Length: 331
Image (cartoon, rainbow, N blue to C red; front, side):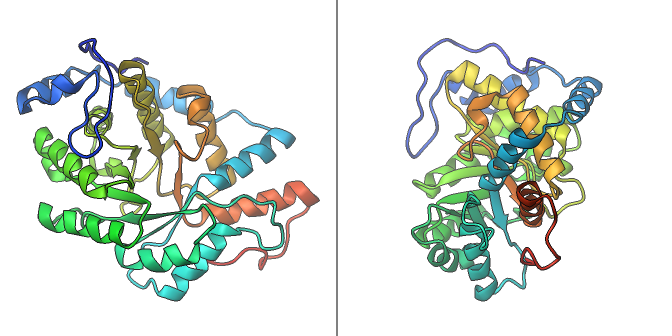
């Protein structure tokens, strides 16, 4: 299912700080050229997309391959707590769990990151120090994104100053749905610059974008603006990550790299709770984007409860039985 549009042929690069430059740089020269490009992307065949996602979801893996998939999924989890009642103690406990998900089995891999609000970044950073686990921070007036740009950028800078390795921003869905694409693009570019060396994940809130065509356009818009990851959702609305919207985004990153040489990660978030769900998403990655994305540098799960089920299934594979209800911690 091709998702690309014609582009000029010239060299590919990405500037540090400021607008990205790549083989599609000309399409962001003005609001009209950006609109023309985004609306020139092929329309999404919704029936075909959903049928392919459903078909890939029926594939099963067994024994050794399943054990590998479970460990891979654990290593891709952004262990997340984004509640108003978050406390330093809860965040420290989450950090300890991210580093050693199964205290009784040190062969269990660490998660990719801990994701928290900006005011908890320093606490999370201390909890995972020396482990290789990253600290991600939501920012830009998460989850609604309803704030002035200056406030959003201050949010980002505070998180980075506290030690955030990754920034998860939300786009202005109102501006996007009103067709103000250049405004959304410029905001992502500004947040990317404010993020400095931190990797930037751009959240679309796919459940609010209404159509697959909009999700495709948002994916390309985010990548054009320099996103290191494109992310489905905040986890705070009714419809979050689905196999279909994630498949569509995987097609977009695959085709973007084919046209520009720039690889971008994908992060489905919200609603992925079981090992069976996680394996379905890994199959989507392998069959759509390819093995290059089967690594936590390029694919993540935004989750809180998923890790517990992965650990239960891992223990079942190793021993042939499930442990009691106190085998995993309650987050």
